[in-house]
Image (cartoon, rainbow, N blue to C red):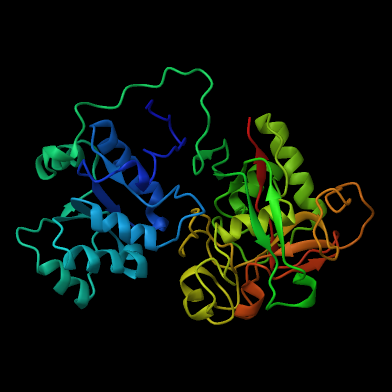
Length: 398
């Protein structure tokens, strides 16, 4: 595998099915909020020849997080990246508990000084010769070489890529010139709508997504919006907060200007693309299940906000690594607000259509959990500017 240059991210290896149990591998546990810090360290290990499993890029047809538990049980070594984000992550805590119960050798790597909750102290304290280490460049590499068994390594580092036109694997992340990170969303199909939801979410139908596309890992921030437009429209100020108080027309202009800067055609996602990416292979009401009990882990909404927007990307991501698909701000879609059944060729994706209502998706900081459901639809006039509507960008494959 070639080293992906600065800001360019690609999956390390095929997902769990590539490991048939005949070769040992290590399981990497971390909060998706720390991905930008953790990923370079996983890349270092991979360059050294270590066989690594991590939970990004799992095919959407697989069950999640059951697939994660399955991989952990079959792994030979457990590395957990500890930070304030990870100790608050129920998924990371569950992975630690399971690793301890299964007697896995555990190496905690501290991203920053973190006070462990008592239950984690008790769990990690049961492992003999436990070490605490911080992530640093060369020291991290030397630490891993000393701490990890040689059996976790292949015969040598993976060979560099020689194929000129690489097929981009599902799950790759790229970063553009203004820092927008985009996840490759695979082609596929999904059940759009909800039989339990409002009348405009029905009928539920299988909708194909015929081509893969990139979608922003996070909503566009105020800093990113200003870098393109030199404008600061938002009511709730903060460089890493979502840009809001932008109309659908402003969102279209942002995409056109960004396209001119990058030489790539950016656009808003269609309504079908948005719901497909939000679900990330899940058929439940939320990306994590049917009950809103865990929504606070994923979304800023009426139950856990301070009557304003919050920085993007600080809560849990869905199974495809996308943050804030539930809550924080509504997100403009390309689509006209039209009744179901959904048909991509019925004119609803026409950006030049008259000034009828356009779809917004995802829920917002000021209202309840029901509006955050994956299938929930709302709309606004394309000229309206509200402090709870922002945008997330999409772009085609090169």
